[in-house]
Amino acid sequence: GQNIDQPTEMTATEGAIVQINCTYQTSGFNGLFWYQQHAGEAPTFLSYNVLDGLEEKGRFSSFLSRSKGYSYLLLKELQMKDSASYLCAVLDSNYQLIWGAGTKLIIKP
Amino acid sequence: IAGITQAPTSQILAAGRRMTLRCTQDMRHNAMYWYRQDLGLGLRLIHYSNTAGTTGKGEVPDGYSVSRANTDDFPLTLASAVPSQTSVYFCASSDGEESTDTQYFGPGTRLTVL
Image (cartoon, rainbow over all chains, first blue to last red; front, top):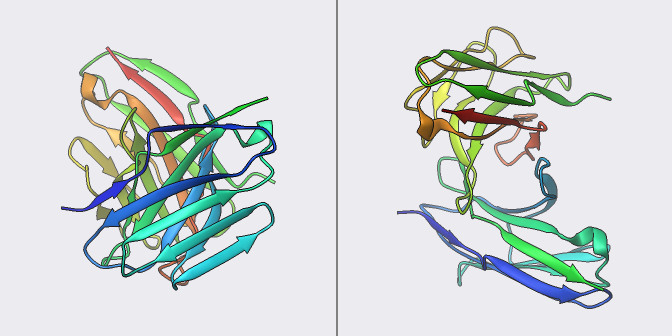
């Protein structure tokens, strides 16, 4: 079966750095997405990786290792508004998005 | 700027009743999707449409039907609601020009079936 694993919840301090990991086992791979979802709101796109390596976009970076079935989202200079759930999703061989359950990130002052 | 709208925002429904969730996008996107989101589970695809006039089944299609008469609208119908269909429903769309296009989500409909 297809599986995407992320930690259920993480806590970090305002101004710090946090890394949210995602491991996947899917039938084929056509890219990996990270989305942010604030409580009660819709998911919004953060990043897309299809090649190995690090993609940096402001305070957020996303890393992919296809050989290890592994990705992480790195958030720097954390702000209170970064408190949200972060969803990892993989595009499988049928170009269907398979979603992880999400990681709830709690930011403390 | 509208993007994707969904209606209603929330609904409480008696089991056995028929219900249609509406979804409209104004971005002229080719592809549209319906997901359900339940606590502790990832988003699960119910149905999708790659272009107007075509639809396909996702991971959890049973008990749901969709239609795509035009580019903008993609309604989801529950023919006879059951309590296990209590969930938050998200509609999404993507340009569809490439299979890896980013999906954009509507605000969601919170449905409770009693």
